[in-house]
Image (cartoon, rainbow, N blue to C red; front, side):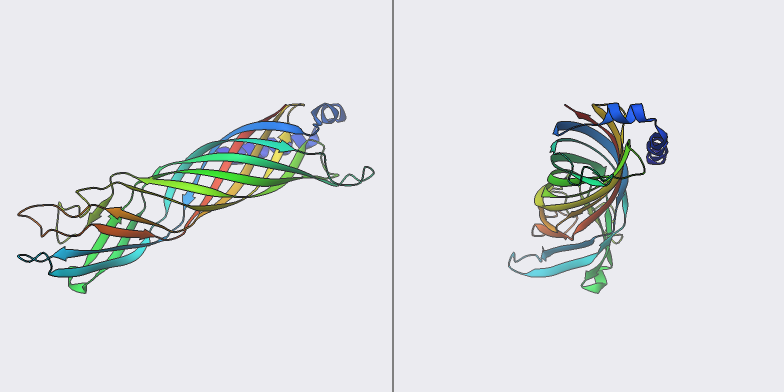
Length: 266
């Protein structure tokens, strides 16, 4: 809803008068920006592997494997950017032009907790439900291209592409099986972290409010490569057989994100 109102506000600038357009024109130079918004994480593959230690011999193991997919999850996020833009590319006689810029951008994805519904092998063990509450920080280098058109001197569409690294932190994960109520199979250490390559595409509209300040609204697609985590062994003496530490693989993560923000050009 916030993004929808922001887009309406951006479009209103298209009717601004010529004097405002002239004062809003910006040249090359550095800029900074702040933004925030919300979106969703798309379903991703999830797999848990380990082994139960069969007493009395610690060398007798029952391999366990559960694999499936997480459901989607809502996510909120915020971030900051610093960039530099150049003069537009294009003929001085044409009202069409392309203005390039480069950015360094940091994004923080707030806590969200996708849950995987995963059939277990051996099948007699039923279904495993693995919840991984995570937060993610992403550092990206972007190339951004803003288009100047004959239709407005104050509202400009833009496209951007970026690449960088994502750092994922999981706190308080849970691996539960309905046949074993009250048991978290990661209980001895439910926390883990990993880093992975990240890719971003974004598209939006920017409204020039004055010579220095602009408002923008945009859609972002964020992709993070698959990651692997090690969680602690199941440790419930007298209640559950001990296990080896658990390995969990999370497939490529995909996010659809919608943001609004402000930029200040120096």
